[in-house]
Length: 384
Ligand SMILES: Cc1cc2nc3c(=O)[nH]c(=O)nc-3n(C[C@H](O)[C@H](O)[C@H](O)COP(=O)(O)OP(=O)(O)OC[C@H]3O[C@@H](n4cnc5c(N)ncnc54)[C@H](O)[C@@H]3O)c2cc1C
Image (cartoon, rainbow, N blue to C red; front, top):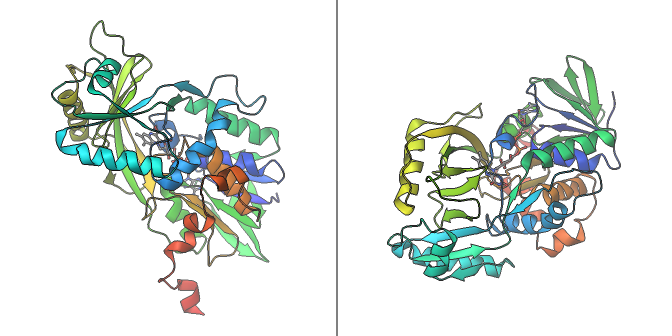
């Protein structure tokens, strides 16, 4: 079958770009696993916080807000966002970090308010008053219905004619006459442009196309669910994030989600939580919160995959014709997905950035994979 684009990866990155591209192009999405969303996309903490992440991430998150609030007709029946503010807390010796973070968020067009200690303790009454010395709040944060968003993109892409193929394994790829050919068990598919949306596997997929890896780092992050203290209603609590991101916690369907905010470098894999990380997360949260964790109800880990500068990677490979990157979503691939996908689709189709995304200060040069190649001549060029 012939297409205009073959998308590699059926997580949030692949599903969302397939949705955008299929509005006016023939798209085939290939997922290696038997089901989509098995890796990072199915393992997130489901937070939308416009204050969270670096400059480009914050801009893409703000530019995604309208889509989340009012998705296209028929996209989903569930609300994609439910209000849940995000509160950053600091101990006495972290006060400087809070000042820097607040100033940086405001400088890049974000909104964040300082809180008095009384307000912070009112928001989360079980916070230890002798632990927290400073707080700031992002009132525009929300919980995301990740599954509704992911399924909305996939359903929408199918309705626009896209093919979604799961269980593809690692197919062989070849290029002839400016067209990629991918040999699947069900037969070959071809397209002039391949979109690399393979998350932690992004460098491996790129290598299969003959491109240089950019040095993606898959970092393991652990999360656990515990019971809230008996008789305490936590559902109105904000998400609470340590200003240096050494832990966070948030209400999650009647439980308290805790993370040590770990970042352990691992090979791309079906990553599992480590007992030590679970213990560290519980310990750090108990230091800040009057909470006795007697048992962990559920634990999991996922890979947050970053480019070397932790900014998004969106754009054509500078050396391999017809290979487009959409990777490096890090810990923000859900909250940025709508605007990230519109950015990727525009650049892959040779169109300018959508005006609202450009207005958020996103510059294609800052997200292009070319930024990693300045001093590294490609193997292909060296061979010539
Ligand atoms: C604990 C945790 C908490 C998080 N919390 C948040 C949060 O609150 N908010 C937020 O916005 N983000 C959060 N994230 C980050 C978010 O989950 C990721 O940024 C996002 O899911 C990345 O999506 P993806 O599609 O790039 O990756 P993935 O979902 O991993 O998808 C990549 C897909 O590519 C497939 N693939 C690999 N190789 C091939 C191949 N050769 N051919 C075809 N397919 C291939 C894989 O099987 C996989 O399905 C969190 C992540 C973790 C782990």
